[in-house]
Length: 317
Image 1 (cartoon, helix red, strand yellow):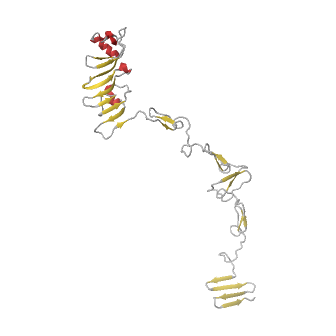
Image 2 (spheres, rainbow, N blue to C red; image 1 turned 45 degrees about the horizontal axis):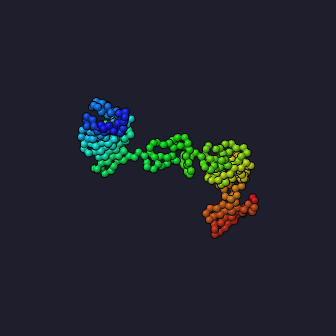
Image 3 (cartoon, one colour; image 1 turned 180 degrees about the horizontal axis):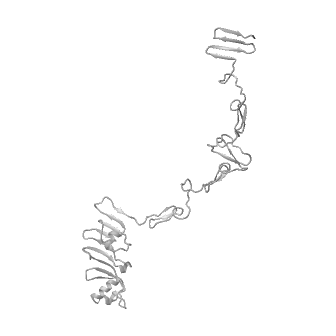
């Protein structure tokens, strides 16, 4: 070794390249004592302590060449094979067992180089016989926002209001909306979707508060709420009385109670002028073209068949 490579204390000032007994080429870090190069034993110790990297034949396969970073220099548990050329021509980065013509694995993963094929993440696989390449990117070139949170693929993210506590802007229609942007009134009661509401006179008892429905209640689309009088104009399935009482068979009926009809379901008379199946007397009878007419005030019975008429006068005997 030339003296200019060492300082006055006998320590190397620059990286020193050296070849060990196996033929591996090493680059040693500065600060190596000059005495480390006095014999093969001390030089081997210097290599173990200070080798930055080694270019060597793969000790497991003498036909392949590897660029290796010792664990001590890398600060890892295992040596790292940064670059590898197999005896059959495959190239590996981060692996000494290339799976394809060009195989790139994650060089930051601290994995035994012999197990990289099974345990290191694939970043790029290229093969000249393949129709496509398998590529995995670690990060996006341009970060994107998802739900307002920046995402570049380097790590998982949380979305407030989705998988963590927080809120999201869900303007417009949303299946997960819990309240309405604008509160509405239903039967005069304010409703924004945050809680159930009760409608006086519908599902709860009412006192002075009354509902007024316009049109048919079952299909009503609008409603108003009043505090004066009870009124359900139009048809209502819950009505108990008629606003205007009606007469049935001459008997007043407003729906508040049952009624009886004289001559129908109770004793009495009904006006059955004209033909009636229950009549017991008649002033005129018809059968086909024949008509019998009895005049009670003159005691005359007339019979006509449409052409001739016969009259019979009854006399007191």
